[in-house]
Amino acid sequence: MPIELQNLTGGYTVVPIIEDINLSLSTGEWLSLVGANGSGKSTLLKLISRILSPQQGMVLLDGKAIHSQPTNIVAQKLALLPQQQSIPTGLTVRQLVSLGRTPHTSWWQWELNSEDRDKVEIAIQKTRLEKLSDRAVEELSGGERQRAFLALALAQEPKVLLLDEPTTYLDINYQLQLLDLLKDLNQQQELTIVTVLHELNLAARYSSRIALLKQGKLWRIGTPSEVLTPEAIAQVFGVESVIINTPVGLQVCAISSV
Image 1 (cartoon, rainbow, N blue to C red):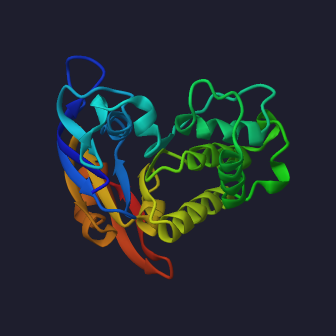
Image 2: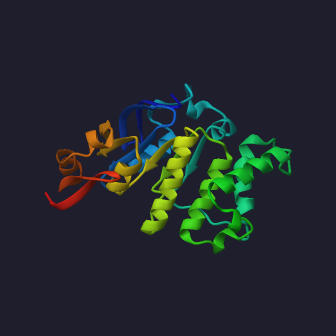
């Protein structure tokens, strides 16, 4: 199991936001964390990514406690695409993506070697940024910028990729482009993915499994059809809904507040 959570509890103060989470991910699985606002989705992702330290329990990465491993070793296996990125002024797309090789280089290495440069170019190609590679990052559109930071994460060659609301601020075209790209990487490279998603229909369309959070606890986990039922949606989101079968799988149609 590339990622395993054991009795994971934590938050920002002594009062935990996430409590007693137990779950594991298989190689090549796509797990989406969904729940109402304040349910603890982003907090859980920060605990998995080492941004926050747990109050109890642990996160295992390839069977080893993630919070006790050196940062560069973790970064060689796990990458995070946060919800909001700092836009570096004057940095080109290629220069940004090159930063993804940092965990694999020695501290005294000022320039990338030929192998690292090849890894950067592969990440640029996978995210279809060849024509934009010499453009400044701050000049890109929202969707292009999201792909540039995804390329940065892919240049790390992670086994596990964490994404916090990657479709926020993107229009529907860019949302589908980004998620289709992630699905290709998930299936072709067996990249394990964990996403925080607000949009239930996108979670249902792309995820292998869905973890439904309620008030900081793992309320239900399973396939989209197992988790996204009218009863579960009513209890967690307070919304009456019907489930519709479509060419892209089940989709949730919200009708009214409960």
